[in-house]
Amino acid sequence: LKDTKDPKSLLQEHAQSRGEGTPLYQLDSAIGPDHAKTFTVSVFVAGRQIASGTGASKQKAEIEAAKAALELLFPGSSAKINPNHAEN
Image (cartoon, rainbow, N blue to C red; front, side, top):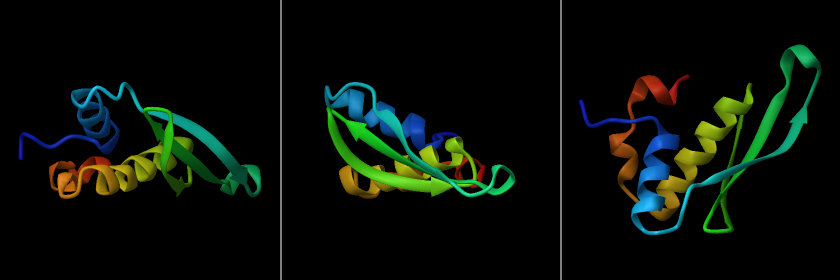
């Protein structure tokens, strides 16, 4: 599957192709002790909050938010996500 990408890149490509600019990620919370924080991040497209995601790092939370936004904005697009990126 050479045409697969990480969720953040795929969301950016789709949003920009529709003239909606680059998605923006905002850290909503970081809860828990330093060694075991859970991060929650929201993603905005064209100034609108689209989705949020949680993860053990900001990067993982951003990936989860991007995956959720892809499903909402571009149903079926998650088939192009590289599974190796989805787990990182």
